[in-house]
Amino acid sequence: MNTQTITRFDEIETQKADLGRHPVYVQLHGIEALRRFMEHHVVCVLDFMSIVKSLQRDLTSMGPVWIPPVDSAVARFINEIVLDEESDAAFPGPEPKSHFDWYLAAMDEVGASTGPIRRLVAALRAGVDPSSALRGSDLPASSIEFGCTTFDLLGGPVHVRAAVFFHGREDVIPRMFMPLVRELQASGTNCGLLLGYLERHIEADGEHHGPLAQRMMESLCGEAGDGRWAEAESAVRRALAARRMLWDAVASH
Ligand SMILES: [Fe+2]
Image (tube, rainbow, N blue to C red; front, top):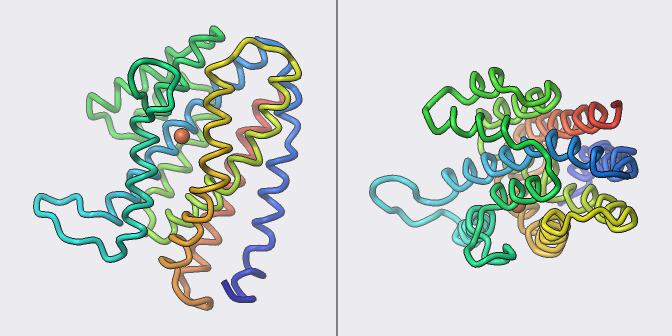
């Protein structure tokens, strides 16, 4: 990454650092606050997977006849992420589970309401258009706004989605989940499945997935000065601002 690229992404680094210091984590003192947090955050778990699968569709061969990937290292990376995200053997149960189902089990464990997100999934499964299904869901309004921003970004080109995936997800998730884990451990809340979920992401995203996601973004955005970087930057800023608005809404209660 050359100087021009680093300068361009300086303000994004500030946005990410602010998300790591957001007051929402230290407010999670009791079970009621945790339920509320999870009932909002679950939409992020669903839309993360939508970003991953959209990248897999572009970066690996998904058509009726297989053709070799342009970059097999990137293809391996995205396939590896999908393997864990969609069917993680690390789930503490007899069968692998998607991270989405892991999160739902964690919500059930603390008594959070999973009705709204399950009804949204049922509507998507029935073929309802994603934005209409989300807008018509009974999830919190701030979660609907967050999800709609992501669905909109999913309509962008692959380099934009790869940048949102790195800066808006892989590189920022450990910074958000670490203070969350510290707070939950300090509060003594009984939420083992959620803690396992969070720790799994801190380990995988921070140590392994993050650097590979950065390489994927850089290879897709091309040389510094290419217009793709400017498109990526604007989408990333939007994605990070959407997360900030979601956390502000949860914290404002
Ligand atoms: Fe995950």
